Length: 284
Image (tube, rainbow, N blue to C red; front, top):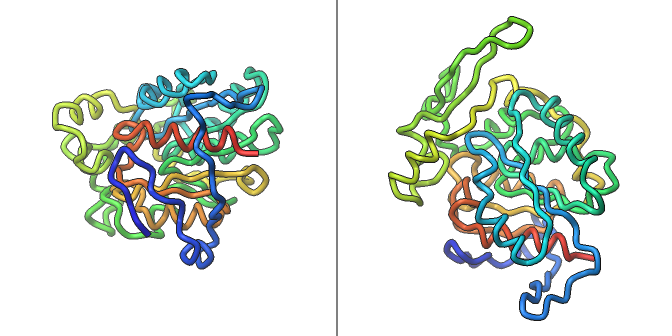
């Protein structure tokens, strides 16, 4: 398999590897940006962020999709627990008219997996270095199945060592725990050292935490079993190992591409993410 550096999509997984892994090798035509031969009714692209980022992480993708004539939204996710986050997104999708391409990054992949189930408006799911859990799996389960994550350097620690817990009082008076990536770990874990220190410090300071409950909650019936899926594997991901991403993509029979980049691939290579979303949007 040949891999391009950031800024370009790698080739769709080669036939031999794909047959072994169960990954689709459907050939995609690149959208014609010069002549704009688009379907009559373009879908709305809904971008769903995950933990330790926010909707602004999609800004480069939003700009490119809007430039290509798509309606785009990037709603803020509460990151409280998987069931309520998914219900929130499912309700949000009811306000969108027409077909939808639903794109999820990281934990956002688990959210779209649940929120899109049973929604006939969602024509495609796009996973960007994202969790695509099966029923009963949590995001914590999926990280633990594969080696290579930099979230922890001590497998016996009760909490991943790169994370900082912050207790908070919940609406019912009980105590919850928010999880942040420690500022000195953020550039490595989330960005694979592929942005400068100043930019990494800015992103670390503005990260949105996720609760411990959310990462441990089992997923429901997955939408990828009934909705066509696309998957971008981030080859240099220090949060969710590329091996885990490949396995989830294969299980979902997703059209898969591989890109040399970090977990926050939408920040470092928004063109690659845009390209995949447009392939999903224009597939027939």
